[in-house]
Image 1: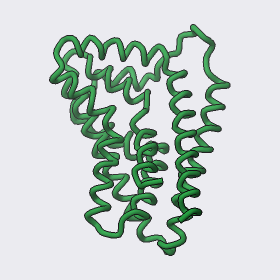
Image 2 (image 1 turned 30 degrees about the vertical axis):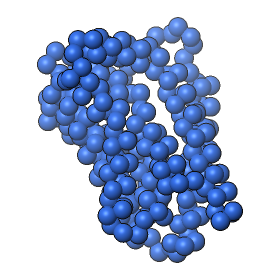
Image 3 (image 1 turned 90 degrees about the vertical axis):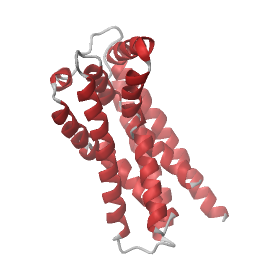
Length: 228
């Protein structure tokens, strides 16, 4: 399994977050909400970048043998994360609301469309950097990146690309709204309504698919190491 074969599911696990995406769309489609939405998406990018960089640096300080310990971590980290996500997905599926039941959104999410750009940026940084799922994925990405690179340039480049992939669902709607015209804005409205209506199911399916992807990535890396 290549470096990006392992990093891609980790980045997608951060990027495919229905709740913050719904919050972003609420801000973006509110009257005069573009600046706040842009601030939130930029804050998200900065938060992921900071957490991924910091955790990669911390991983480099661990007293392990890069030739053996890191190779083992490259197998175990995605494998264990994948199993954990699959278990979480099964639990969430069992506890999902009944079909057709109205699912109320968190109160903090409904208040996002009234934020100033500065506060939205700070919330974006905090939510991206300190959300437990994001921290775990960023730490796993740091292990993978350090196992693939020894030079600072390669590490920084991989961290930058990882951050961009993990932020694409936050930056994409803002750019589409800014440059896409009325047709794209209408589609964003429908996307927001679809997310709000199907939030529990989307969350469960996302967690399960990414968990399976991570398990396969870990098994693939283990097989590659066994055959090399």
